[in-house]
Length: 81
Image (cartoon, rainbow, N blue to C red):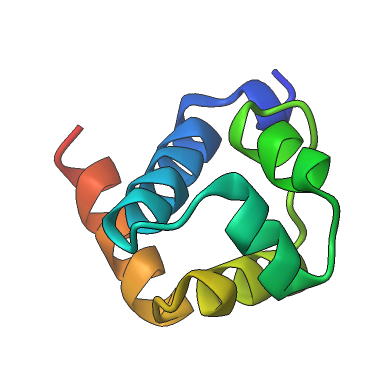
């Protein structure tokens, strides 16, 4: 199974989307903060492209969330699944 279609990777994307929505930020606003096109955010959130570790950290910081805290939430969510 490819990682991009893995349920654990989807859980990570869900947390990133939740964090962006909690910040009241649109895809376009995040893209501007990242210096990337809006399609980068859309394709990432829709699992059409995979984030590497550096991009993950950049996205978290663009949203205004701590990447380590988000990974901790992911770990908790996966343990309780």
